[in-house]
Image (cartoon, rainbow, N blue to C red; front, side, top):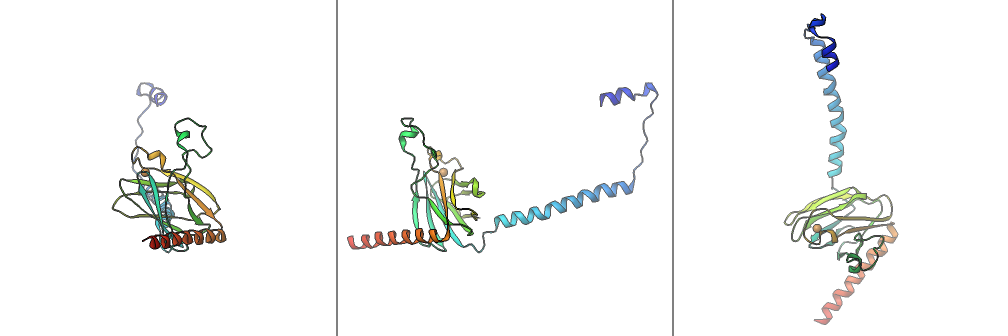
Length: 212
Ligand SMILES: [Cu+2]
């Protein structure tokens, strides 16, 4: 800019350019960006709508945030009726630096959320006390869990395996101690797991009734 100003100054004999508007050029530089914007907006909108579309899931799990753990209720699909809490399983000694830290330090729980591979899983989120957030980066999910409200999201895991996440909304002193672990199983394996869970809770319920 400075080069142009100095090199083309009036004292050197340069004359100011004298432009006139061109309707054709103005039309072109208006229409081309418009077309680019529409071309970008169409697939972007389609994707955002698809990302938010939680309709017709294969199964539905309600996740409830607590200070400081997660509660899971399988509401629909295979495994309907399964219900458990999922708490941090990292030994306190590791947290207090009295023992060496494990491989999945602060990213391990006693009861994992288990889902079958390749199925559309709808996750309904709420919280019992303050706002938490269910965040599993590898599944592309992050959704706030707000007390008194229901929010939902969904995912389909393409590969069996263990996916780890964390609460992503500062929720109190143990915010960093309420991880999320999702275990994705093959269909047959999942069926076995679900049956065992339902069986165990049926046994517990009947014991409870007998004790009364
Ligand atoms: Cu939390």
